[in-house]
Image (cartoon, rainbow, N blue to C red; front, side, top):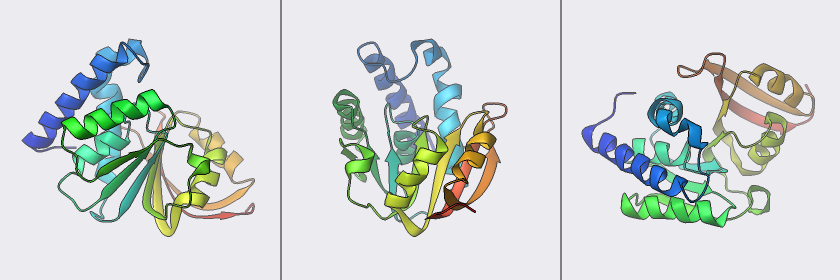
Length: 198
């Protein structure tokens, strides 16, 4: 994704904050910090490329170090999308709030609760990266995704097996977008989630 100078500057500031905080709380694996741009930030920017709609409420589940939620919020800061980052770990939530404040991301709020304890958020878009197996994520989508909403779930090389497993319990539409940053990985575009095996 090609980004504006302002977006690039904000992403750089975010990366610096993440590196600073990572020495105290484990936001990303320390060994991956040297590849922060390609392995984490560029990886998440792929999701921003898939979004055509510049409006609505976006919910990022298990935001952790802000991947992909904060990266998406920075990339889409000039749109009308509002973001809710859900992170139950209080220390990670404190990091997220610090980035939101320091980068002046006015359309972003952080909720420090467990995903399953929140009332339905009726989100137009939901994202998650390295949070849970797809079958478990479906329960979260069923709860928080609007009936016409779309989820973007970042999955590793085992994504096909996860889709098959999830279909034993859930009905959903799924388009797999091959990852440009990790061979065999995919971004799963999921919609039409309902309970009951196909």
